[in-house]
Image (cartoon, rainbow, N blue to C red; front, side, top):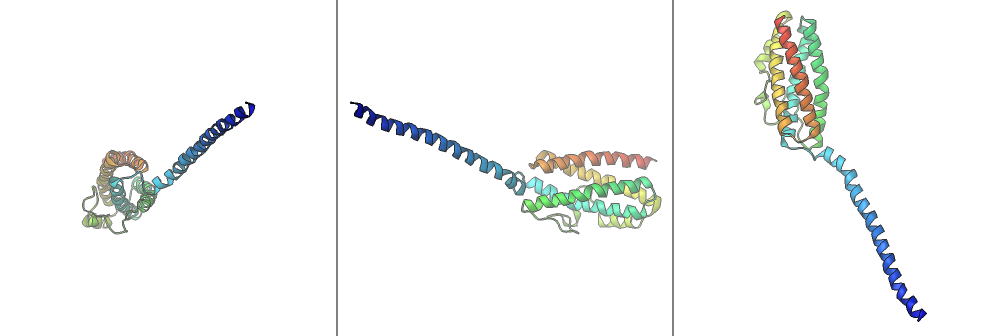
Length: 205
């Protein structure tokens, strides 16, 4: 009778151990299964996920837009008469240079084309279609101006240029998907709106 009870206990113990083993195995498997995608997700998102076509368009259009602003700012360093205009131009160059680098890095990570210098962005060669961009003739006129005449022309053109950037940035805020790109768009709206006000005040002096 004791032998029968002992034999009966063996399968029960085996079932109990198997159940514990399965539970332990599932827990480890579940942990591994969740930890791997969690650790891989950020890098995948940074490379190509978490963005949409609006983000790509924003970056591809803002790069040449910023490049032109820097070109205008470089002219101010040699041609402007007002220290305030020269200081503003330096601030614009300091802010927008790093933004070009960041926008280019995003496009590379997203597998999208980075606009080459001298182009107006994908589908926008010649600066057509981008708000606030100066025409070749306007840039020529700015290059030919000096002193107070340059200051006025620079301020008027840069106000127009900034307003275009703000319009593009607001579109990114409303239709973009990338949190980082939308944050940059918000920063552009804030900083360039403030600079527009500053330039309008300088024109009144």
